[in-house]
Image (cartoon, rainbow, N blue to C red; front, side, top):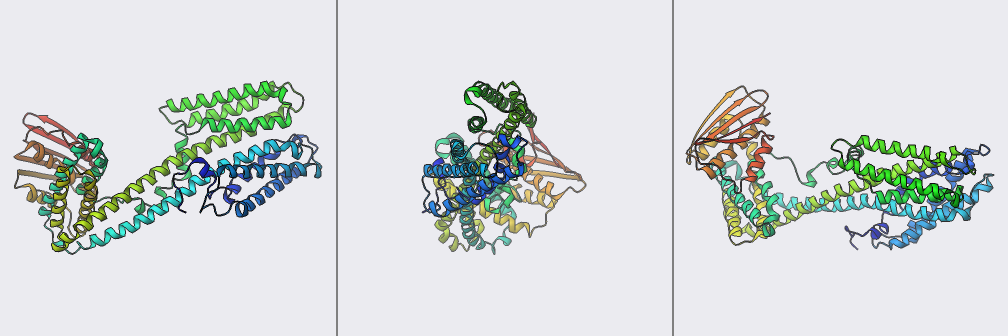
Length: 567
């Protein structure tokens, strides 16, 4: 049975990652530390604290043995068929009862004083249920995501393998390409992509899905080099954020779930108080304390939401105020059953657990959002790769007959895209767009290993490509600049030339580029008409990316003047 990657909460609780040894080891040490200090006998001064820790350790070891037995024999093979989430909660409750009953039974045996096993059962049962729910959700969120991501990455690697096979067929013909001829084909594709972008903006209901795909395709056509972007090509740390990064995010955003945190805290405090105080005596104080605690959580979250700065300070203030509440609140107690100091210790222990829950719910919510983004990204990438490979199959015979000519193939893609646009078939464009992006990226990867890059040679290429349509004058002054900067400047200048031809029908374009060891400044003037705005958003967006936001364009008299600084 295939694993469900969109399960309900109960399906997660009944899934294969509940009742795991990892979940037990993750929670038991904290529980073993806090269990003794909420026992009145621990603070009496007449009983060995080491013995208290030993009793709690035995109770948790028995609980661990039960978890192992339940996982192995009561609910095995949950990966093939998840069990009922309600059943898992009942198993957790029974485990809590076993742990509480064991500790309660051992207390008098070891000469300690405290609540007996029967009286511990209500609290222990509820804590066992809470434990199975929280650990199941946390473990499931992590490992179900890893399983799904691994499957998507394996599928993507297979699809990329198919893609590499067909791209390899063009490898022999690419070195013989004429760069000006290739640039003209490139320009033709850019015009079609522009038309697709215009259609996507005008008819988002049918064509909106391809808007970002067109942007990515245009960048493939323009950029000289492109970093890997697919999930399978990224390093492992790119999609498994570090704990440090995660804590940095949740310290700046209100990522904690108040209902969950408060419900768990309320349950813990009420049942703990019931073991050491008469409820009738403590009820009023507990109600006031809980209302104040809830108010602190709500006000803190609202303050973090409204803060325009780093919210770490607000988080720290929240924790400090909660700690002060735990220290000051018990001083108003009128009961003589336990000392104020013991009440303060119990309250501080509860506050520490509450803070842990605040952080834990924040981490869970953050990781769930981030993981879903990566899953969605990988799913979309795989869908586009499948469509690309399907498109290749559809044109394979024609390309084979043309001896795998890149120019013939790019013309064929351009023709198909125009046909799909005219016949209003947005679904068919997706595979063709991806195919064009992959082929142009392959051409550039091979050509970059052959062609020697220089600003002058690039200007000569630009003149050879566009000089038949307009007069292009260029000057380059200054010392050499870093090659990476120059490789960004040339595509930016070429975009401006294309805008001048496409929109303004310029008859004269002048380019002035000044380079230095730090970067380049360039100015592009053209005498064409004002540049239009329809479909221009993608080009401007790419220009802003290339120039780090320094691109500016003004109209002065009969000239359009564009400037930018790259460093």
